[in-house]
Image 1 (cartoon, rainbow, N blue to C red):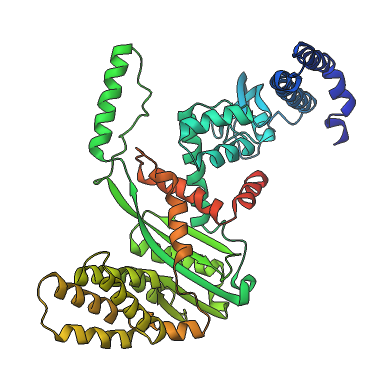
Image 2 (cartoon, rainbow, N blue to C red):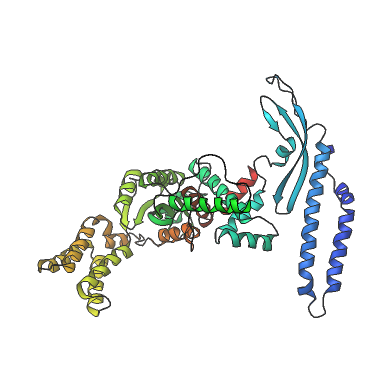
Length: 468
């Protein structure tokens, strides 16, 4: 209704004193600056004055709106199904941190036996569940993706003039990550492209595992004992949440698994990760492939490191793929290791043998390479040399269909898993910093945020959060 909207003139009248104060502060900052250094001396005081004015402007605008709607909108109407009327429980204070500063409100609380307590102003402003605005949450998550929570909090204060303790920042980011993970898992959110949008309608997929450092149960017990001793020494109450404490990992490292989808020129890319086992990744693989409609792609294939669990999941979950290709560079690593066992690391003979074998497989296929290897195996070899040759042969025999590189090249397929390797590094970079240890669910939450960022979905996701 028009009469319940604030007008520019009303806002100007409420801000007269604040405008005068802003003008005085800016003039004082410039007048106090030293000649020859005016900008450097005055920019910080002017910035601080502008931030203070921006916060007051936003606060008073919302207070005006609250006063206009106070009469009707902020009194819950009786419901036919409710046997009791709403009782006025008085006024309570609350706050919300926004990109324009900390806002504080005093609002009326209502209660009845069936519904409990409600604050109509909170519902109007959209702060029922969060005391941080979407803009603040987005800034906090963006900064925390690339650095630890302590420096991220310091940078947030310096660049955005938002003060959040590092512990509150950690809880905010982990909570937001769990929300993102839940949205993706429940298919409420996903890639903004399908196979029809891809270059030449070609979709390439890859999967891999990467080790992530976790907090062990023993480390958790030690931390709790240290914190308890500190609290007793300072004579203060424990801030630990009630209930059974969270248990730690049974080992210092666990393998997290990642699946990626992209097109040949990498203009469309998408990746998700999980802390679950290969069966969990398989189900995620099928779910995410359905979102991009991989079955409609003209060309679709995988490029992986050839791990048996990955091959099984692709054969089970995505049987429609045209090919499953072994990453050329993983095969090359195996050949290099064998050349070192045969002729010694760094020798010319080892380098020549490696180039010869890779030339066979690249230009003529793995069957020719196996035939050449058989010539070396006919000569009696014992010890590490014989074991290395047999291991290489067995590795290739299991992956003959995945190493037909001449055919793959003729069809224009990629034979390297570089994009998937890159996703593994990007999605877990924040988790593998020096000295970092994580709870499994929190690590998965941070990885979900990284997946959105490196899949070019960050802006769309936060726009959706603001619209929710």
